[in-house]
Length: 85
Picture 1 (tube, rainbow, N blue to C red):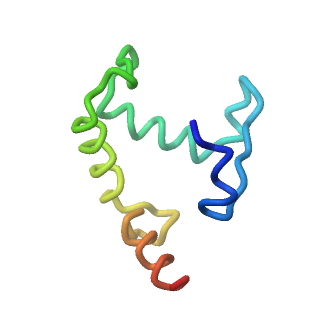
Picture 2: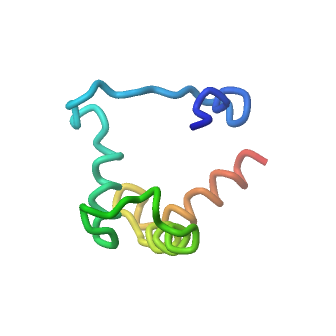
Picture 3: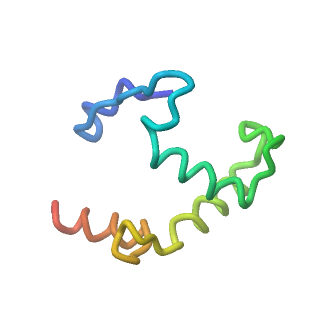
């Protein structure tokens, strides 16, 4: 909801894909598939308690990814953050 603040907060820009164009957002679609392992399609994500969402995020962030050289997203983020500091 605060996408306008990405530029000032993180130094990045927001980009929105065209509707019905999943090929424009491969990483998002991949993450959606991973998240659906834990959430059935009829689950209202906005109705989930924060605790459940945090649990799912934690599981996703400790899963090694081929695209990250078999590091976890958490490891890759920490390494990138350390490089920038």
